[in-house]
Length: 404
Ligand code: CTP
Image (cartoon, rainbow, N blue to C red; front, side, top):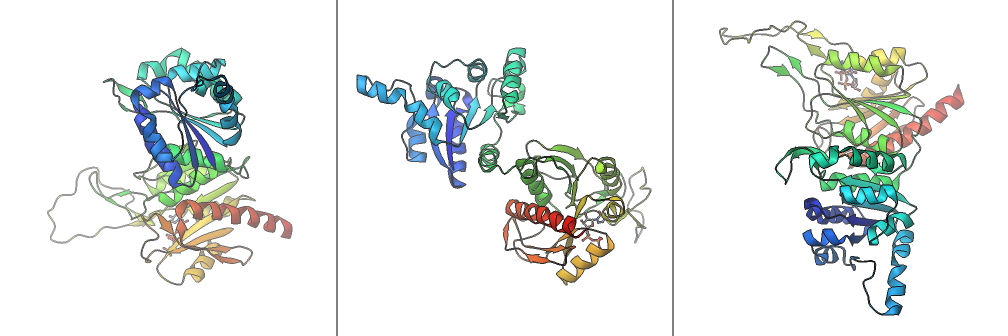
């Protein structure tokens, strides 16, 4: 995978070095183009050392007639050789040039010559970002099908606080790799995904929860969005940034998750229930803090609605994927949940293995399917597991339709 990384002249230009590195760590070949303004902030040598390649800084780098001729077609070579053009930071000036087709330096000329996928990560002062001129240019570029990674909000180098910060370099690199790899086989699907734990209040101060980090559900959401699906991510409280392009619905309790799932059920074609929902809660938690007056105390808990089972009853021909977190009898428990909750697939994992399951970056799961097929997957990153779950889900749907 080959990526042309255009760096604009903004204070965030130094972060482009981290982006280049994160892209290369994920297997991409990176060719860097610095604008003249970017060169004021970062030296070409930094990028040359990182990428082991010449860094392009000018449309007319040489003075001899022969060299001018060869370097003047350099932008065509770069346009033809690279799969994705990433511009980070994309300044207001660069986006204005791109939107209006100005071509007065290497990067803007390359943009016009480039026919592949384009991804822009704008970063600038909040007022510049909010200005109608910038917003109109962003809208023009988005309408051309380019991916725009909206800036993060926070304190900016200029002293103001608001939108304008370049997002985390690793997130930019991952979004770029997604774009380069993009399989669009989930286009047209609306995928409802639940993720994370729920929190059930005991009183205004305390709650009952579990060890779910939400990483598996968020990886599913990111993979589905990258493959072209509309994604509704219903998430319990987690410490994760939502993936680009997903519709995030934040909930806290099992009851709130239940309500959100039921609200969005009709519009979904695939439902993935990766959340670790509390099975019991305190139906009416006291409004005042419980004081330490008793020598011993017990909590009376009532069951929460089993969301997965209810979706199973109402699902019609939607594809339903449940999860089963187990400490033993993986496949038997997976089968039992598949039957009792009317799922089409259960993703079963042993949560007592070292390095997988709750909070881990990797997962090792077994897919138990309505067709009777059982597919144990290798230990992989949660993102790779997510993609394999969708690969199997699409095959499963074909198999189920064929037998109907
Ligand atoms: N689930 C749900 N609503 C609940 C409890 C669980 O939708 N109130 C869903 C989870 O999102 C998951 C699946 O059910 O997809 C299985 O969750 P798990 O906790 O493994 O199973 P339980 O049904 O709670 O069964 P058990 O406690 O017997 O293992």
